[in-house]
Image: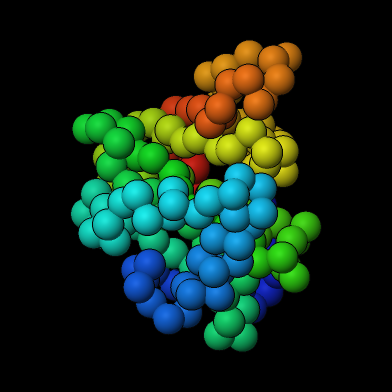
Length: 164
């Protein structure tokens, strides 16, 4: 079970929700700082993250967004995680892990049996999160991440193991 502080609630919504704006703006700034571009955030239309094939959620604390994430349909049995993000003032509290747990559980409940994701080579925090959460790297961990590009991971889902 993952730790999340009392008073943190799950809010299912869309990327267009004004509550999502502070997180998405900070994520865009982070991408600009680390990679020189935030174009990846506009790669998919909001409908990709809508039920029944996708989801977009925020974790709210006292009505304010502290973390969020989404998934979209990658293929018939695979959900692709996108935009997993914790606001910089709320890191190291288990919030990203909670986002992963909720998204994994919901994806399994909707019939997906696998999660796929990529993270950037300049995001060692994300790489560590996914490894700690049981994701299998689809790349050589000993290689220089910059030589790989986006770092792909996968995790096979089982409803029994994704229920908190």
